[in-house]
Image (cartoon, rainbow, N blue to C red; front, side, top):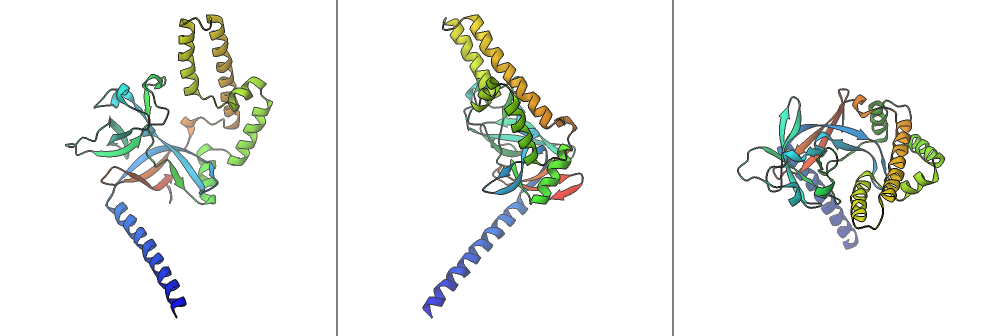
Length: 268
């Protein structure tokens, strides 16, 4: 009898725990403030978590001019920030960025975090803060993920075919471009390298001709890689279908993606 009793108790406890978690999160989301945010999705594959749409929001890149309570030089990599949202039409936009949550503010704040590579010296040409909110993934079934991928990007090819075509074009490019790509040299890394080259030039480690040669080499590789992406995905982002995500924001400022809308169709 005992052999049967204990497994049954364990199963009941597990059911109660899972049910309690579901009820807790349901109540939490029902009490949260729901906002609509504009996004542009793309569709990768998570081996461990299944199919999902990876999202970038309009508020993912915020002008440094919206930083209210400090200077960009005071910010640190992976630091938590609070983005004040303001409703404009049907969707919400960033109105301000704070290092510390204002105690007397009655506005709606969404918690975000600066990237691990943040530095005030490399804010980019647009002088913008890149902020992650923990709501950059929206899980879907296979059919829905493929539907959004194809409709939004207006292409008949699946992401697998896109990747196959990309690798084919890369293999046809010159050895130097392949080497730079394999080294993982991204735009922000290259921008920091150019600043370092200026220091080397000033200290006499390299001459102006060597500096120009290095910069031209990486600039040419970057342009070739951009051309490959244009061939793989010729549709410009400005031509993409509008995609809206409903995000529930709890009283502590944490966001939870609830629903995704595209072409008046709802995805959960």
